[in-house]
Structure formats: structure tokens, C-alpha cells
Length: 169
Ligand SMILES: [Fe+2]
Image (tube, rainbow, N blue to C red; front, side):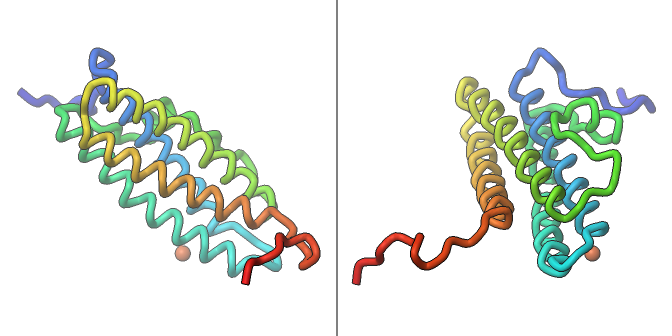
């Protein structure tokens, strides 16, 4: 029978639910962080970053939904309050407005944190023989590694032609 209390966090007796909930909270925190940067970025690279951040946070909104629904399909309850998300995430949130370069650096770090969280969840999915969660987590890992690469590339100086490797004709 249902009552009016808030949904409990996933049962600690089911480790895959705990790992999926952590991955979901980490994705949610990174989504919010990225959307905040989309709003608040300034400087000469404004349009480039404003647009990139929008593409990335919108992708993560759908991912959070997928992770939450996987938790439900396994019989757990998805975290659904700011307090739960904050408690479960390892992603650090900012207390002040950052420069555009700092934003990119912080996102690279946050994507690395999310990738670590996803790898933990992936290991657990393999341990409990849950190929559906495994499939979802591999896809999330692929996306975050790609997003991290794109952001890291923004921090690199482009090499001069003399530094580039020889191409084979
Ligand atoms: Fe917008």
C-alpha cells in the first residue's frame, strides 16, 4: 500500500540499483552543471560554448530518464529530489560563476567522475549478469568519453603544420 512519504532511495541490499542510482544522480548533476554553463558562459567563445553545452545537456536529460526507467524496471525507486541527487552524486557543483576556460576544465573533470561512476555500475551489472543494464551503461560511457574528448580538445592549442605527423599519400 502506498503512503505519502517520498520515494525511498534504492535498497542497499540490491547493489546494481544503488550503482544505477548513483550513475543517474551523477548524470543529473552534470546535466545541471552543463545547463548552468550554457546560461552563464561569456567571452569570445560564447556562441561556440553556449551551443556545445546545449547539445550536451539536452542529451543528458534523455539519459537521466533512461537510467531512472531502468531502475524502475528492476523494481527500485529512482531518486527524484534535489536532496537525493546531491547526496548520491560525486560530481562537484560550483558556488560561483566561472570563466569560460574554467567551465570547460570543470566539465572535463566532471565527465571523468561520471565515467568512473558508470564503470563501477558496469562492473556490477556484469557481476549480477544483467546484460540490459550493461548495454545501457556501455552506451552512456561511450557518450561521456566522447563529450570529454570534445571538451578536452577545446583546451588544446592547435599544433603548427610542422608538428603534425606525416600523412601517407
Ligand atoms: Fe538555451
